[in-house]
Length: 420
Image 1 (cartoon, helix red, strand yellow):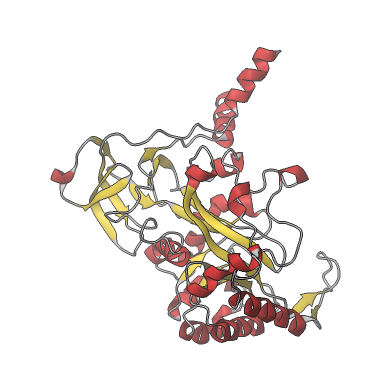
Image 2: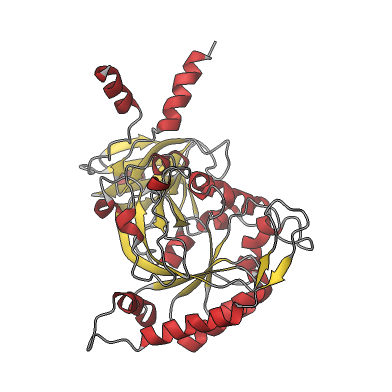
């Protein structure tokens, strides 16, 4: 019985992290999607010690192990921002959940120390090209700080790309839906506590801004200092038009250097003001129905294009119901945005370089450029399309990672059973 248990455990365990890159690797004759809007045919991509050293068409630059990729496509690894991947394993088992903490103002809560590199859910992202993510806490008014990781590591220290990159603030709702979620007669009601809740945020931020350690050390206020001096970004989760306008005013009054709104359902109504305030946008999941009766039926699908056309820096995120397991659909969110008017390479940019810019790590990841991490993959076809997204190889910081997961093992197991 013990032997059977051991074999089962080995079969369905997390894939062992790949070993460090020891020799130069060259991918030749591929179509390279750079991630910055450029496309290179018959490309040669070379990387050594986990860093890209050449991108172009000169075959003589190829060295070390050569991977022939004629007819295939190379992409930078996709990045899933505003994600709880690795913080919850099984929704129905409370003991596996670390996505939030008790309390209202929690700037000192750090999501990264709860991140589980052994998560089978995280592992299932890699076969679709989602190789990195911003691990983000939830709950409260201020949820805490996120960190950016790569998805092939022994522990959270190994996974880190950028530690404690941003603080997350959940802006109050101006209106709330009444009644049961499934009630067709639900109506929006004004939140009578909206203004006091906004004033609480101002009071808290003003108090943190004048904090010094001279008298008593305060870990909460200490964790806030980065949003004022620009070393930590502020992500404000907000959707309504009025609320977004209030966030713009908040940024100006508090003199906050780096602010991104997350969700942004009605951001297209105030796009000019957002641009003038230099606020970037993480657009909520595009695979959803409109929120209001008078919205265009395709508003969620075309929202990324509307905001891009207005001159905003836009990237895609996937929060919402079943967010963790649906994060593997990130490339298809971009594909949907492309199907509704956005240029395909621009759509790709919204899950690669634009995301990296918003997260403040575009000097390291987000595109296939010399000097950046060799975090990339080879796909048989268009990776933004479900039929074409078939990965043959993937690398994280130059390491040749496994594309196996619990799901791929089950696929092989049952495809063999029913192949006749």
